[in-house]
Image (tube, rainbow, N blue to C red):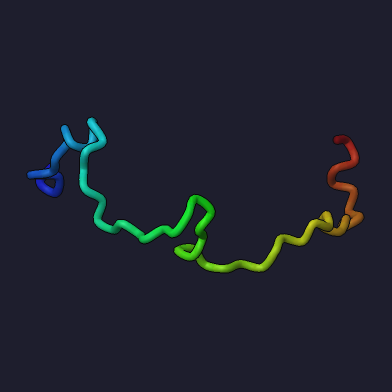
Length: 56
């Protein structure tokens, strides 16, 4: 396909392609490049009491 024309397939196969973005990382546990999200709620969802799962 014309869209892939000139793509370095050998570099992809060998893992030698240069990444388009190289983030700066201060340590193995540095998460500064990720968005913050609220903690998950550990409570199970409420039962709707419809009985749809009674056979399970």
